[in-house]
Image 1 (tube, rainbow, N blue to C red):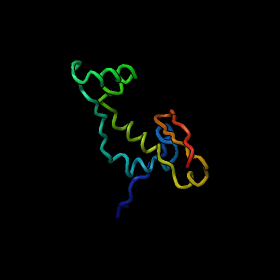
Image 2 (image 1 turned 90 degrees about the vertical axis):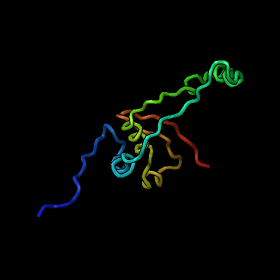
Image 3 (image 1 turned 45 degrees about the vertical axis):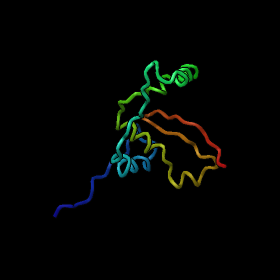
Image 4 (image 1 turned 135 degrees about the vertical axis):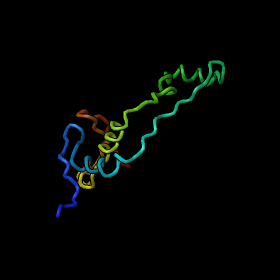
Length: 112
């Protein structure tokens, strides 16, 4: 009689920080829908005050974000942003970092 257990995944250190993050990706993040950012589309003659602020503040890219995304990279990003209970217990300041395809980035946030 054949075994019905799921295949064991090999840890992919290029895609995930630690095994916890890979397990989270496979059990949860992979199944989540990715919704791209939605910009706002104003004609040049509509709401000139808003358009002026967008230009003055350098928000042109923010106001018109990319609408095509790589779903797998977004899911990996969120899976890698999570920290395990063990990691949280070991740290006073939780690092808000993520890891995407071998590159780590983020910032440190103080707890209040």
